[in-house]
Image (cartoon, rainbow, N blue to C red; front, top):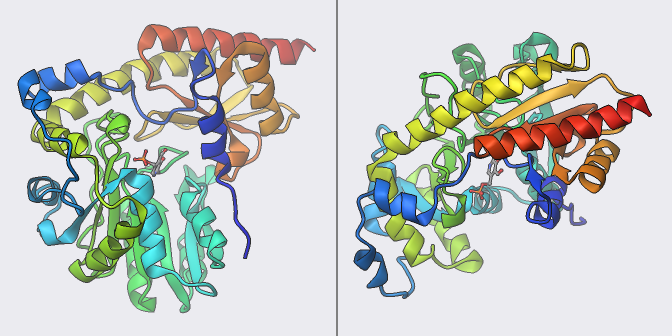
Length: 372
Ligand SMILES: Cc1ncc(COP(=O)(O)O)c(C=O)c1O
């Protein structure tokens, strides 16, 4: 088996802090520490006197209880706190998959689990969200792709990159099929709470005894720098994942654990801030896309700070974004990094004035290409 690089994260890791305009981010303009202390009503001395020791390895009891309280039927024993959603997804794969297993992945997707599974020597097959059907999956394809020998099914809901939330029918079909074949279902719900309207995406936790949900503070909560994620699942699986976590990062940062408890206590206020940014900036992006006439085809995302736009240009998406970065200092995710051709994933969660500047740079870059 050979290592599969994570192209999307490599692209961002190398460039996101070296460009003037970053439209590759899928979360919203992060809260500053000052804003977080204010919104959580935390006095600075409470932070200043915090001892910087190791935290409780699986997350403090307080934090695990606060997370569990957001999942009907969960207790702190169903929760492992991780370093971001990335560690949550990674150790879930590590706990459940062995070389030669089969994992079935919804595509397009954030391709972390795809790369981890492939790097472990796991076979991966897929079922698709279909652009010609409003990004709904085909129910027959779900039935055939999730095979009797599928060990793990991975879904991101709300989805990255389409922003689509599964309909009840599609979600029900996936759960029915994993139950039929006895597979595990990993649902990455990191964009839950970042819906553009007021409908909250329902969690899949508790829908079947082999459902594992991953989530964290990085996207809907606008706190990616805290690096707090979590796994919610059956207690046995959580114990097995915690054993792996002893090898990865030992424990979450004590400062982050402390701030995460306070953030969850004001969860609805933080999520409202996120949705306000998303609604406002999406309006700006939509106008910008419409102004191009026939060049772009897209669907309004249900959730998340990303919009997937298919372009009518005969140019490879990686070549296109490389040109935009080098010539116009603007970073966009190419469709190729999320399993698609001729598409761009445009992040719209940034601070509004800066975001408008980024769209101007993107326009200049695209106009240059079209007129060439
Ligand atoms: C679907 C999905 N899961 C997980 C992650 C990683 O999250 P974190 O920054 O919390 O590690 C991302 C980041 O973009 C994501 O899009």
